[in-house]
Image (cartoon, rainbow, N blue to C red; front, side, top):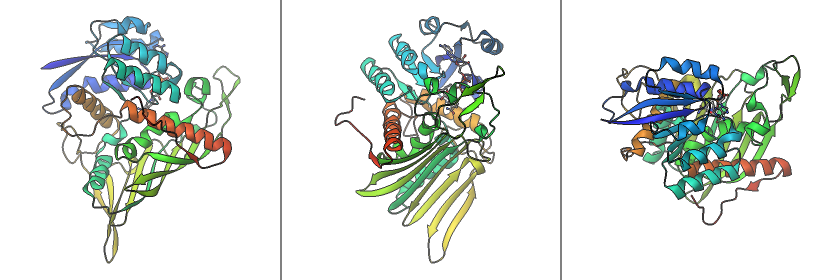
Amino acid sequence: MKTVRIGIIGGGLMGREAASAFGRWFVLKDFPVRVQLTAVCDLNEQVLEWYKQIDSVNLLTTDYRQLISSEQVDVVYIAVPHNLHRELYIDILRAGKDLLGEKPFGIDLEASEMIAAEAARLGRFVRCSSEMPFLPGPQRAIAEVLSGKLGRIFEIRAGFLHASDMNAQKPINWKRQSKYCGEIGVMGDLGMHALHVPLRLGWKPTKVFAQLQKIITERPDGRGGIATCDTWNNAILSTQVDIDGEQVPMLLEMKRLAPGETNTWYIEIYGTEGGVKYSTKDTKTFWQFTNEAEQWWKRTDLGFQMPFETITGGIFEAGFPDCFMQMFAAYVAEREGMLQGKFGCATPEEAVTSHRVFQAALLSQQTGKFVDVYFPAAVAV
Ligand SMILES: NC(=O)c1ccc[n+]([C@@H]2O[C@H](COP(=O)([O-])OP(=O)(O)OC[C@H]3O[C@@H](n4cnc5c(N)ncnc54)[C@H](O)[C@@H]3O)[C@@H](O)[C@H]2O)c1
């Protein structure tokens, strides 16, 4: 069986999550490719310590150039602050490696376009991380839309809600500072997650009206002082998408201050004949609307119906580590030409499109107007 050798750059929160997915790869049933974590890079030596427990890792380094020049690495998963995306992603591609890059895939539109253009020029297999759509609920929502049973779709709502910033005493980190996180702030953190399914269904915003908020503007700096938080905390984007020639409203919410929400990803799609609703708040619950003499929202508990079959019992519920692993399985399967019509990871083009929406949102916030999302006549990617 073929083995794909993986290197991780950025061993923090997401680097460890990725390592754990590779470590239990055998839960995938009859999956045709193995993965092996061979190398990890992080600037912080203490972060690297954790990876010493993984036998397959034979390179631990603080210099990413050493990792990308290693013969032991075929694919790089990278999870570093946004200000580093452009330079590091492009260096990875130029070193001859394929890439699963974390969102937002560049700190801004220009960076995302440069990464996508380089990937296309070099012919590398590149995808952008967005795992929530691999849960059973979003997969079912997509299937219902594609079945045509919803009739004429007239409204879409999608979002990703966090509450951790409600704690004003939480010390600042790079995600709360524009120079590292990007001027797009929370849209860069959560926006690709909210847009992945709509974009895959062909719902590309053409106009946007944005309400962006900076709610907590100072935080403890962790050294006894106070530091400025200059990123947008919350974003509500009223967008418009063209569905079969009709202009349909699509509301996108990305929030770091959403009271009580730990990691709530949701989507709601309403049509004239039916509708679907899913939220990770009720992880296994899928809601389906039927427009009969009496109108019904029917609720069903979904089991472990993952895109890639696993050994896990069908009645068990799926969680974050599961969808993250499924995303990697989709990456590896697609790279091998074995996706077989299953849902694939976000593409560079989708990541660039998300940036176009966020850039238009910044302009809308500045001008107080509903603005067009700019798409060049011929997109290079
Ligand atoms: N897919 C998701 O659900 C999800 C969730 C959280 C974060 N993210 C994304 O993952 C990326 C990283 O976020 P995180 O939460 O893991 O951050 P983190 O701060 O926990 O980890 C980042 C790591 O990168 C390391 N690093 C910084 N510069 C480096 C360099 N030049 N070379 C090597 N290592 C370097 C840091 O030491 C740190 O350990 C971001 O793009 C973020 O948007 C994705």
